[in-house]
Amino acid sequence: QVQLVESGGGLVQAGGSLRLSCAASGRTFSRYVMGWFRQAPGKEREFVADINWSGGTTNYADSVKGRFTISRYNAKNTVYLQMNSLKPEDTAVYCCAARFGSPGVTSSHSYDYWGQGTQVTVSS
Image (tube, rainbow, N blue to C red):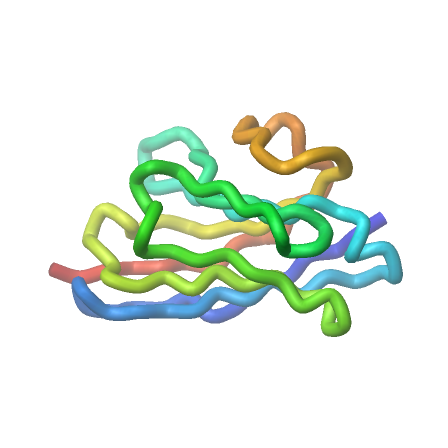
């Protein structure tokens, strides 16, 4: 069982940056693939990025590639999402999620554990 708690969301102007954190409970954090998803009002939840257990393999949605960076620090049971050059269309609730297996799976249905999410709002 893993419990996930996100933090770091907020209101930022277009072009600005935010860093989201996701703190996980449990001693098996390093075994999980960790992902970030987002959901904007009236839209489906969408994959943003994921990272394998060691941090050596990452994947990104085309819409955030080159602007967002996912990383993890297993000693602190934490995964991060650094978001730069933010755009109004990045506005959404951002959730982290955990699953076993290999990275690169973009379906939210493949993830076993979810956080409550943190709101990111980008003003134009």
